[in-house]
Length: 138
Image 1 (tube, one colour):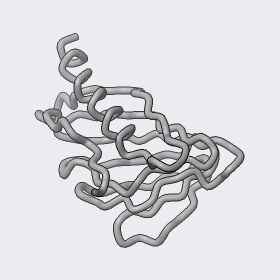
Image 2 (cartoon, one colour; image 1 turned 180 degrees about the vertical axis):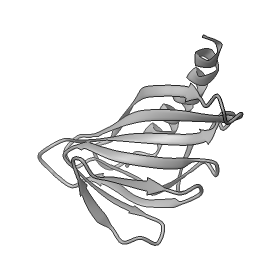
Image 3 (spheres, rainbow, N blue to C red; image 1 turned 90 degrees about the horizontal axis):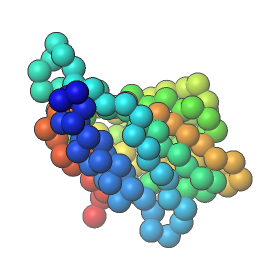
Image 4 (cartoon, rainbow, N blue to C red; image 1 turned 120 degrees about the horizontal axis):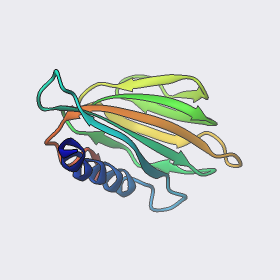
């Protein structure tokens, strides 16, 4: 039970920082906590999952995640356009996935459709004490 209490602030930080990274001039994605657990055999590390829902036309501004964050993203529904680091822009459809290495620059993340929603599951392996997990470009 104590682990859950410790990780609730981490989940709140993820949701708040993802929400802050949304585009100011268009529809915004919403982020919903899905799972959070410290890793018992890796002291100081946690696994955190969030659902990122993109209404039609929604996008995030370019951003970076915490230096400790390795991220696995799985497209649950719809189509998501993403560009991470030096990789080319790519559209991922439901059932496809991509990853972000610690410190990677996420240049683009948006719904590929102007008429249908999209959703992805983002799974973070992160230092448990990281408070800010997403920082939008200035």
